[in-house]
Image 1: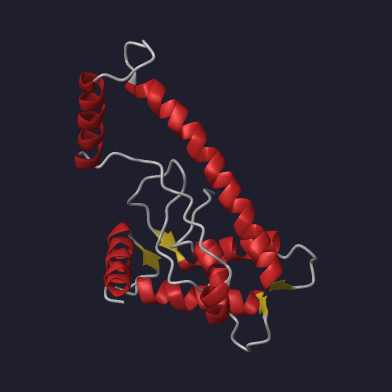
Image 2: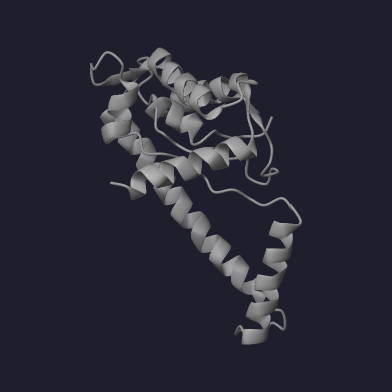
Length: 186
């Protein structure tokens, strides 16, 4: 089974964020994700975040996971940057000419318009602050698996606008646009 998450719903489920759907690394961008898949992933992510194995996630544990993922994301960005340079520098002369840059940009555009598959970003959402508070149903400063799955289920249901039990690419995009519009109006 591929690792995936709805809107960060793996982690966002824990955080109950208004996270937006993400797809598996290397997976098709139009892949749908079922609620059952999302809930299994929430449990996996919850177990990973519950460092002391007491059945709940504190803000400190949430922040530790968030920091770890930030560091991992930063490392991947550096690796991808070097690999991207090598892909664009087609004549391997150590510099990117305007012609090489334009050719690469045209290839990327062609992949996008042809519906090709692309890698998605990590999509992990913050577990602290407002997101943590939204998931913490009883306001005790700790997230339980039950609170995390309930928050993730609520978010899934909000994104699954046609109520077919699967969040599609179109539904994820709609939610991203809606969230962006809300952020822009603040």
